[in-house]
Each structure stands twice: as C-alpha cells, then as structure tokens.
Length: 372
Image (tube, one colour):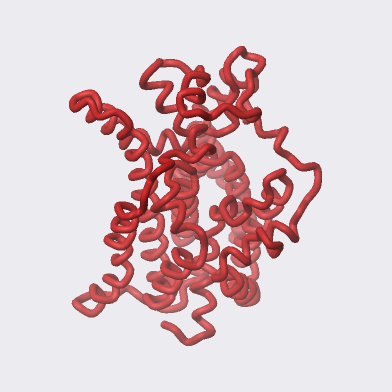
C-alpha cells in the first residue's frame, strides 16, 4: 500500500535474516504448544457444525447431519429440521473447504492403519497451519510497509495480546484460525492492488478470496464493501473512464460470486434459500456495542493490545484520512454486526477477524514510538 509505506524496509544478508528469525520463532513455539496441550475435548461444539460437512460427505456422501451431530453428542436447538427436510446447519462450509487436504489425508491414513479419530486432529493441524500462515503473511507485509521492528511488534502483539493463540493451537475446530488467514490474505492482496495499475484479473482474484472468506464466516462479506469504495473513489480522482471502472468492478463481483456460489448451493439444499444461513434467529434486535467492546466480556478487556492498536488507527486516520477511514469502517462494521447478535459476549473470539487490521494499526503506533 504505497500511501502507508513509511520507509524502505527490505532486508538482506545475515542481519536481515537474523531479524526474521525473531518472527519465524513462532513456528516451533506454536507447534510445541499444539503438541503439549491436552486434548480431552477434541472438537468444540460450534466446530462440529463445520466438521460435519467433511464427515458427512466422506462417510455418507450426503448433507444429512443428524447422525454426525448425534455421534458426537451434540444435539441442540440451533440444529433444526429445515423446510427442505434436512437438518439445518447454521455454520458455513468455508472451514471445511480449507481443512479438506488435512481431512482427506487423515481419512486415507485411517483407512490404511485402522486408527479412527485422527480426522479431528487433522483439522486442528489445518487450523495451526492457517494461523501460522496468516501471521507470517502479515509479518512480511508489515515489514515491507513499516520496518522489521514494527512488524515484530504487530506479530507478537496480536498473537500474545489477543485470544488468537487459543484458537490457533488449542481450539482449532473453530473457524478463527482459518478466518484470520483469509482476512489477512484479502487485506494484503487489496493493498498490493493499490500499488500498481488496477486490472480485471487482479480484482477478480481479490473478489474470489473475499468469497472464500465469506464461506468461512458469512459476515466477512462486509469486508468486500471497502475495496469497492476504494476503487470507485480512486477511479474518480484519477480520471479513469467509467467503463474501465465498471469493468474492474464487474471482475471483482464475478470473482466473489464464483467463489461463494458453492455456499449458496448448500444454503439452498439445507435451508431452502440461496442466501439463508439459518442465523437470522440469532439476531438480538438491538446493538450492544458497549458490552461488545468494553464490558466485562468485551473485546478490549480480553485483548489488552487492542487499545494500543486503536491508537494507531486514530494516528493513521489523521495521517492518511482516506486509508484510515477504510480500515476503521471495516473494523466498526464488524463490531456492529457482533453487537447485534445474541451471543455478543463472544466478541473477544468473534472479532478476531479484525486482528489483521489491528496488526496494521499496531505497526502504525510504532511510527510515533520511534521503532523502525
């Protein structure tokens, strides 16, 4: 993102590699934690909603989840019989899609060695991989934009100063690690597109990444609004032909629809509607913004690094109003969505999709601390 870049920060030689080792140390640390933690409850209740897509597809070849839910002792009101006659599943299929290589490998392993149950550990390994990949992706981006010290602060600050660590190494059956990776990839691709000449192909890929992110958690579709706003405003300021802007937006939309289409088909089969995720009943009917952010179960008390990140967000908004407003808008929109659901008190977990934004803001804070 050329407008945010503060100084050239590419490193070469032994010194640069040594500094990178401080970041890559997360690899052995997270792997050791993953192996050391006891796993009495391998699959978290919400995680069964994601896992059921894989288990039902591989074992039964269908989308009838009643046997999967009962097999794992998880029957609750959220899992209802829909108008299609199937058991409704309020959880999207994106995590299952991203876990597929690990699950398929474990399924073959089980078939050969008759060691049942390894599939659950395999999806947690998948979450570990995506969590590490997202962290290193953001580290490389921040190192280029802000310098290696800011990048390290962003990486370790978010890993240790939020609940992200918990969902990367312990509760990998949930969607947070895969979601963090997809939003990190989406933001990095968006900022890279801002540097060069906008193209149909580049924005098509960005839309496709956004579509997969929305398959991981449906509310992530809201992130796609802000690159679209960015494209429209920059196109007008830079005098792009309206037809060219429209063509690029069409590519962006087509990429999203193509990637999100499988989820729409599953919504239709399970719930009888192309866009019905079976989550509407989870809306509270009011906005609990205060409790979501600063209450006893709020995002800030359970994520002590986020206040410093918010300071960086304010500084970026002052220094680069347009870019700062786009990131702030994406953050606040996610807060509003979480504050409107009945389980808003899960904000410290659900709002981890904003962790990549908080990493950028945390790096921005270092600009005023003299860390380069």
